[in-house]
Amino acid sequence: MAEIEREVMDVDVLIVGGGCAGLSAAHHLMTKIEEHNQAVDEGKKSGAKIPEQMVVVIEKGGEVGAHSFSGAVMNPIALSELVPEFKAQGCPVESEVTEDAVYYLTRSGSLKFPITPEPFRNHGNLVISMSKLNRWLGERVEGKGVNIFPGFAGVAPLIDGRTLAGVRTGDRGLNKEGEPKGNFEAGLLLKSKLTIFAEGSRGSLFKQVAKEFDLFAGKNPEVFEHGVKEVIQMPTGTVKPGQVFHTAGFPLSKSVGGGFLYTGEKDQIILGIVAYLDTEDPLFDPHRELQRMKTHPFIAEKIKGGKVIAYGGKTLPAGGWYSMPKLYGSGFLVCGDSASMVDVRKLKGIHLAMKSGMLAAETAFEAICEQNFSEGKLKVYQEKVESSYIKEDLYRSRNFHQALSKGFWASLPLLGLQEITGGRGLSDHMKIEHRDAEATCAVLDVWGVQGLDHEENQLPKTDGTLFFDKLSSVYLTGATHDEDSPNHLLIADKNICHEKCTSEYQNPCNHFCPAQVYEMVAAEASQEKRIFVNYTNCIHCKACDIKCPFENISWAPPEGGGGPRYSMT
Figure 1 (cartoon, rainbow, N blue to C red):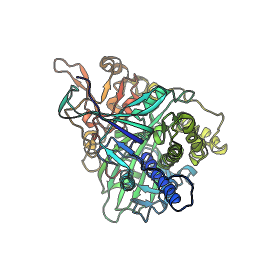
Figure 2: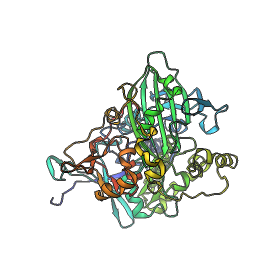
Figure 3: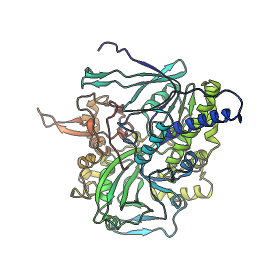
Figure 4: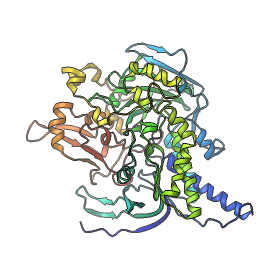
């Protein structure tokens, strides 16, 4: 294909990602500019007014909120700072938490903890839908004059020496062979003075930037959790809003993690499961484990008579403080999940993402005032983060993942010491010895000769109401991609999939992917199985980019607008 001529758009501040971190950054930046200009007009502040700024948010989803997914119980502290009267302003809160508890589940019984551990106390927090919250934030941001470009996927950073100079968006209207179709639109060159990366977990653009500028030097490797959840519609009058229950034990036996059940308004239950991706289990399947969880008597009783109306999955960073990269460089900042800002001890990240976006906005405002976007000027962002409750929360849980990765029972003494010593434990800081992909063990070592035939690896009988096979669950995500577009899931060497991975691991991507993207299917000319990629099923969780034991799969942004269509998650 001939070299493409691309339109150049000059931007003052470019925000990559229309999630809660990016939208908070955009909202707060415009508020700071409004307040400054009003103070100048009223004579309360000397100096010049800030001229109109070109602030752009690019969002790969077809609309703001379409790719937003979370648990989600939210600490409202950052939202209260961003929009003090958020309830009066119509923020879509499902319910306020009024009851919480933790249960340990055996195969057929349950044991309630006599006292809810401090990390799981949620009174005063809010049960929300992340997709609804971000749609609401998006409307407010546009009302402040920010340009939101949904359906625009950032695919490559623009680097000028040691400065980040902007982002190139993806081409649209390419066929499977990468050739232009009749509706072809070349991607834009968005030249920006400052770029804020807020892509969420395993940000594909920030991954490139981090490698270019060596932003993880001296840090623990990034590690992740993988979560799936369903929204279950219950009969009218059967659900008490504001309940938050967390579980340990069943159905997970080979992986570290747990389940959750939250209740919202309109008689809806949010049910999910989260597990560490450093599991040794090559057959770990979060979708299957969620279906198995619903067979437990404790859960079955609570969802009896319900119908699953939504499903989704995502990864979330779990390394915390010691896995957090350098947060700034010449021309850029990074915030939220892209910067590993999740408190895994409390299973909370939304308020940290929003606060980091706000601190990035304050840094951007100061840089705009001085027209100085150098690394030296933007360093103040790191200082702002380290003097905020972002550090307070993350530093308190700085060794949590490392301890819990040793297994639920083995970790309890270590976690107890961490509670007593403010997160230190026996040693500080605890290292993470390997990336998630390197933790995978052979099927024979984990499951013996039974492998996939083991009873724990069986999907419960489906009924299309409460129990689903994976493909039927994917339908509930609303996922769509143009079938005549390039495959965005790139396998470096398929021979590895067919030979080494099959014989040793039985192709983990066929299992950990929550959307049945990867399948081993018999070739037409023989009975030998070959990898097949159903890329139109992809819900953008990026687990394949993280967990493939040979690190043989790379997730790249598809044509803008493709992916899930979340509306109540």
